[in-house]
Each structure stands twice: as structure tokens, then as C-alpha cells.
Image (cartoon, rainbow, N blue to C red; front, side):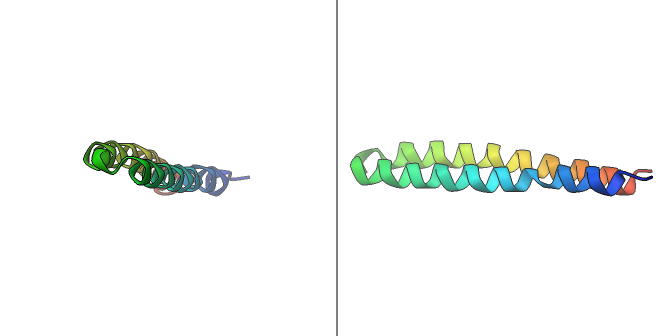
Amino acid sequence: MDFTAIGAGLAALTGIGAGIGIGIATSRATDAVARQPEASNKIMMMLLLGCALAEATAIYGLVVALMLIFAK
């Protein structure tokens, strides 16, 4: 039995975690800017850094999934 497809599917699920993380971070950043508008530049910089790191985990999951499918 070949479990490659199951492994690739599980690796691709990292996109769900990244999406949830980015959504929560955006929500918190919006709240922070609403409370302290003068700190919006600093908040935006930290938000973009966090989103980039969260998206990197999703990309790593995609790469692992593709490697499992195509690198036999």
C-alpha cells in the first residue's frame, strides 16, 4: 500500500494553520491600531513580519507535499 498521497495531504494541511494564524494576527493588529493609532507604523511592521513567518510554514508544507508526490 502506498501512503505517499496521505503523507502529501497531511503536509499540505499546514496551510490551514498558517491561514488561522494570519487571521488572528490581523485581528489583533487591527485592535491594537484602533487603541493606539500613533503606533500604527510599528504595529504594521510587526504584523508583516509575523505574516511572512506564518506563510513560510505553509510554503514549507507545500514543498514537502510536492517532494512526497514527485520525488519517488
